[in-house]
Image 1 (cartoon, rainbow, N blue to C red):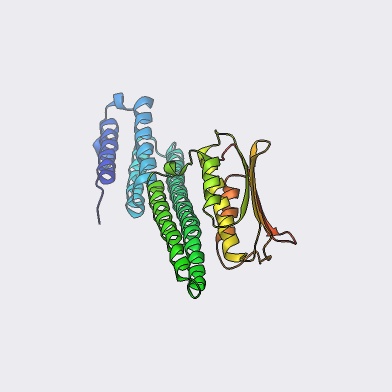
Image 2 (cartoon, rainbow, N blue to C red; image 1 turned 120 degrees about the horizontal axis):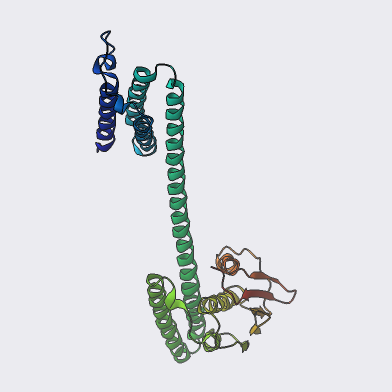
Length: 330
């Protein structure tokens, strides 16, 4: 256990100084409570010297109550109070003794308040840091889910199709392996990009050409998709990243949960100060909570940006819509 000597040294110096000034101004015989008449220096018995002593003592008391460990602070503050009371008694008897004690209590209270305020500020900073870590972990989990679920689901669908076709046409099944290899390559590239993005605090995740990325995503989805993308070139990168992930996750959900879907429509366009996107299919409606984290992650992502999100059945299929403001919320 490390012992800090500064509180002890400061207290000893101040106590010694107050006692010496008391002895010099009133006589050391009185300072030691002796009956002999004291001989002191009247020059030191001035309001200025008394004020300096009081400020010095109160400053050290405040500092001890604020910074020193608890039990040493109690002992040292008590010593300072006793020395101050002694000096006041020797110089003025009861005249200023209550004032000195009250001022000491005020200094202790102010120091304790500063101690509690500093501790509260440290706790708030620690809580903010923990929230930042938690948000970062959520973002990492969401990114991992988006990337892995999208690419791996595509590979799984192609592998299942190859198994079915292999019984009748092995050559055709072998031809499907190229798609699986391409999917694995894309998955590896996406994982590397995600790791680089996380290391760069998200800067590398911003898409440069959102319209082109969306059309490429639709083309590689393996679904019959009708895409309508009408976006300006200056969409904020953080917003473009979220739009891309939302469409990607929606198409992944179509492949996973709407295997009978024959028609999928993706619409992304610029509205009044916001990007409007919708993904609708004609597959069998499924429960909103199907055991995964896709919808949860999409809803969290949209709400973090200050937008609105909806996902649910339409009576003839499933609809995902989102409205993302162009001004990305900090």
